[in-house]
Amino acid sequence: MSNSGPSKLKQSLKQRIIEQAKQRRQTSGSEQHAGQSSALEPRVPEKFTRFDLQPGYQQVKMMRASGARLGTENPFFKLHEGIAGATTVIDGRECINFASYNYLSLSYHPEVLEAATEAMQRYGTSVSASRAVSGERPIHEAFERELAAAYDAEDAVVFVSGHATNVSTIGHLLGPKDLILHDEYAHNSLLIGAQLSGARRMSFPHNDAEALDKLLTRHREQFERVLVVIEGLYSMDGDVPDLARFVAIKQHHHAWLMVDEAHSFGTLGNSGKGIREHCNVDSRDVDIWMGTLSKTMSGCGGYIAGCHALVENLRYLAPGFLYSVGLPPQNAAASLASLRIMAREPQRIERLQRISRYFRDHALSAGFDVGESIGVAVVPVITGSSVIAVKLSEALLQRGINVQPILYPAVPERSARLRFFINSEHSEAQINTTLNALQQEWSRLAAR
Image 1 (cartoon, rainbow, N blue to C red):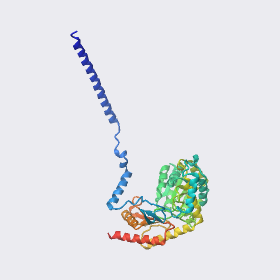
Image 2: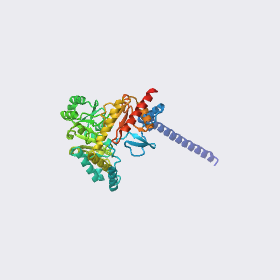
Image 3: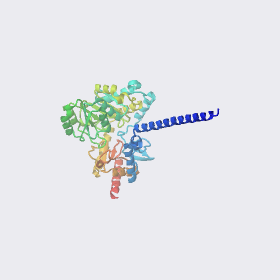
């Protein structure tokens, strides 16, 4: 009996030591496992996981910091408080406006507003599906039929986005065995489409048809399909290509020619039918006509016009059309109404061309550099300095004139500019006021 106490104590101590050893082994194993896991897990630098460290955002911060150092306001995202045409309202003040694509003043035309309202009341604000599924409406068919007729083309198809029209069309039609040749000033959407396609991409000097011919002579036989891409009216410079020459070259080398008419349809030619009317070229000599609805046609979206096979291919297979919601009814109706007014009232195009030439000619007389602009819809005033362009834009806004600066890297620094979009409703008095103010403010900057 006397030994039972010590025996029990020994057993208790032994059990406790065993339990502690187990705990130590478990703890040691956990720590070792954690160490192994830590060593195995990749250490990803924060610059790859944080949005505020991404290159794009860093570039935006640098731009803002540069503006702050120069004492200039952000020239972008100005708040327009009403309809933007030849005039607009910014911060409660009416300004002469040169920052709108509303070239023919149709976005607030009573017929356009009525057509959009009626379509919205009949079909709702959205067709709520891709057109292939359940988004097709009679207004789409009517609009595409009249668009095709305006181009003397077999067919046309409208996309819900102008940018996506180029991206999806080029990305779908071309592939890795093909070649895309584009003007060096081609719009971003054309370049993104070329990248998406996987085709070989080459640029040629701006409006240089002979350089294009040499590239095709050197490279055409190495590829299956070849697409040449140009624009009808270049939105940065306001100049145009020699369309007949580009047609002859593409025919000689058995290539396709695509013309982006975002800024030329509705502005060029006696009746606004674009670069082909301006250059007296048969529309069938261009394989792919592209345009946007957001300029002279008062809507939002884009279109392709051409032969029936091209359009059917895009309608059934182009991702940007097939997998996107159909164009909202009010957009299609507004653009269709604008198209009809353009055909009925060619005096709008004549007025736009006349007042644009007036701006260009008087800018030249005042000593401004307008580059190669032909004086239709788009007239740049080249400053040669991003800082000067921003300061002039800011000073003009203080005087009730709204014009956007175009800065590096959108253009080379030596080509920084103010870009004037002309409206058919601009008056000679407004042009004179603007050019006089521009002269005074530039002289004031030079004197500092």
